Length: 147
Image (tube, rainbow, N blue to C red; front, side, top):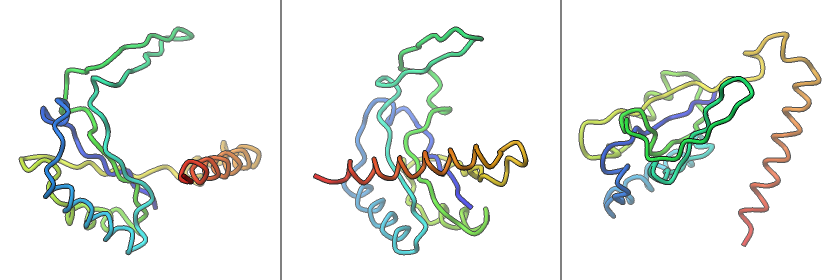
C-alpha cells in the first residue's frame, strides 16, 4: 500500500522561513531511516503558496488564481510518499518523524489509490496506458537525475 504523508503549512512555512540546521539534520536522518527500510518512494518540501497558483474549473472554463492562499492550516508544506503494509504501519513511521514545525502541528496520512481499487471501469486498455505512463515518467526521472 502506498500512502501520501502531508506536512501541514503554518505561518512560518508560508513566510518562507527555512528550517533550522538541527531540524534539517533530524529530517535527513529520518529520511535515511525510511530509505534503509525500503519505505520511502518520494519526499519533498514545498515552496510557500505565494509562489504557487490554483486552477479553478467551472465546466469548460479555467480560471487561474495566484497565491498566496489565506488558510495556511489547509495548505501543505511538504510530503512523503511511502510504501507500507498497512495504515497502522504508516502511522508508526509518521510517529517517528521529527516535529516538522517545533510547535503543535499535524501530519496527515492518506492512502493512495491502486489500480485494483477502481474495479472493472479500469479496463485492460486503461491499465496498459497507466503502465506506459508510469514507465515514461520513471525514464524522465532517471534522465533528470543525471548531471
